[in-house]
Image (cartoon, rainbow, N blue to C red; front, side, top):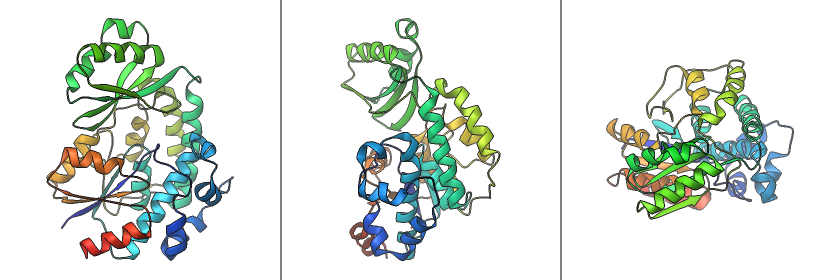
Length: 306
């Protein structure tokens, strides 16, 4: 068995996340108690309010710490991965788990990353939408359509699974793209509840600001292979990879395909929910997929694997 951890991205956060593992696992408690930020992270994760937890300024640090607490709780029970990856923000969780960043460097970094992303785009001018279709070529052609381009930026932000691709850009351009996609037979296009056009060229300037921050943070060589969003494979230049990540397409399909090619046959999703598990089952139906977020799911996984 070759096992990999997959760390959830922004959007899965919920009030109460991490509270159970904090109470039940000393290894998880150690992660939460080590964090030193300018707000009460534990209180926000465990008690909310949801509105503040959904604010990108706070979400990224909360989700990173919760994911790492769950991961270290699993490790304390003997569930140890040989590789890792994460979706968007989850990439920072994967890298911190792999010892690239210290915990406090990571939470400070993603706190500032969240602030950069929250202020990079004027409110109400851009967004994202999930296209439920396996025809990526059609989606790419619609994004390049003259009618869409006349209204602004519309680009592919995430290749999440064989039948879900996320587009990102100006609201008017997304609306026109949605109209054209539905007219061309796409089953469904779902607007996402996000504050801006993440993973698009509209964040090019923000990426330069992020790069300045990344160059101030000590970076170590990963202790396990981490597969990156920009390419779906390990990268030697971590600063460049993370700088490009916020304005580039998340290659999640390629990531999972490459991990399977490299021998991974068991994936464990770390964090609230089962979003990534659903993607993996579509991309690689032959592998085993689990999701953990509390004591019950960790105990169940331990019984399945050990």
